[in-house]
Amino acid sequence: MTDPALRRTSLYDEHVKLGARIVPFAGWEMPVQYTGIVDEHQAVRTAVGVFDVSHMGELRMRGEYAAHVVDYLVTNDAKKLADGQAMYTCACSELGTILDDLIVYRYAGDDWLVVCNASNRDKMSAHFARAAKDHCDFADESDATALIALQGPGAFHVLSKMGSDAAGLSQLGSFRFRKAELAGVPCTPSRTGYTGEDGVEIFCAWDDAPALWRALMGAGADIGIKPVGLGARDTLRLEPRLSLYGNDIDETTNPIEAGLGWVVKMEKGDFVGRAALAKVKAEPLARKLVGFEVTGRGIARHGYALLDPAGQKVGICTSGSPGPTVGKNIGLGYLPASMSEVGTRFLVDCRGKSVEAVVVTTPFYKRAKR
Amino acid sequence: MSDKVPSDLRYTKEHEWARAAAGEVAIGITAFAVEQLGDVTLVNLDVKVGDEVGSGKPFGTIESVKTLSDLYAPMAGKVVRVNDELASKPELVNEDCYGKAWMIAIAPSDANAQAALMDAAAYGEYLKAAAH
Image 1 (tube, chains in turn red, brown):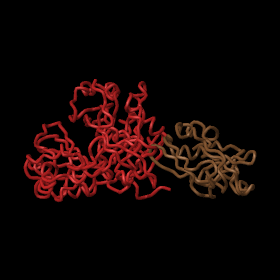
Image 2 (image 1 turned 180 degrees about the horizontal axis):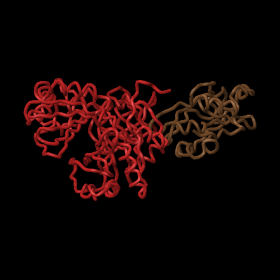
Image 3 (image 1 turned 60 degrees about the horizontal axis):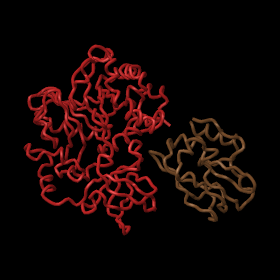
Image 4 (image 1 turned 180 degrees about the vertical axis):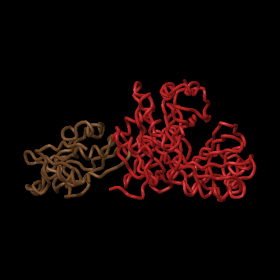
């Protein structure tokens, strides 16, 4: 059953030991669930969960002009970052469509890290390498870099037990990162995530990940830490409406219609896709990515058609599942702008059955401020 | 994997079970199927009492957080009962798949239809083979 072409992260044996169900994902054998999607989802919302996201790509840009190259390739304004600060952004094609969504980390003015989706690693690696040519150094560090996410209200309780260097990590601002040594492992925790909860994502050397993983699992045992697979990662990101590349956004969508206009900074100067996006912004949008709730009996799934009340296909569902925390069947999809207002009723074609749905405000879930 | 395979039931390759009693056959899904699905969030039974179902034909769908699966009738017959409770309590499938989460009962067109299905021993072997 094992496909030799599939790769394993350095945490693969940990997943197997923890009873994970392993599935192929973006060329990797990854855990989709351990104890169950809902159980893992609730652990992250109420306690803490740990995720292996080592499959993601890490691209390093160094040199005097690294900042310029990175900034030219992304839609958000990288020039606004300070050392030790990160930001979410899109990288677009010249057509203004989305090549990938990324987090860009400024280690120093001449030292930048770009984290891309596993499914886009080869494409983005080539894209950044091409732009870096003759301007700055480029290195694809994905094979040497592991990434563990620690997410949930108990994340900093867990970190506080990871050694003397962990002190003060809770003071790290949102989208800030620094080097640290946790349980003896040199690493870089960053206050970012993909769950809607507080927490960190921790970069470390590929082979150090098992030691760090086990230390986190041990430190979180008292509050019921759970390993979390890709299944719950998807429901956890959908509730706060975080986009999933390949589902909600791809090379046929632009950031404006996808609701990611807030990471497109037209005033920052030239960047790849700027002219096309200026045109998009100058005209009324044809369609918008909206959040919806299925009010009838059904669950919208990726690829299902969205219908107007007369039954005509007018859009497409890009993500959908039960929302374990919101307690409703929720989804994202593209609808004509004229049907994108909150409260608009439409139908989801659930394999031939028309099921009622309504456009709602997003995020579906927002964590309470402490 | 669950190795609980009740000995008094018959089974299909699609992981449905059939229980014959008093001229009708109750149908549900096995613990193995439930484990594969995970948390069941929706059961749609698309038949009503009096409908005819064909052997191997879908009579509804079951959905978990991640996936949707069809439910297939293991034999042809007329629907005599439908478990309406599953509409509001899909979690019964996770809690008691061989009991409270029976889905439909049919009066088989062929009284011996159930003999064509796997017995517990054969289904157990089938699961073992599927695991490799």
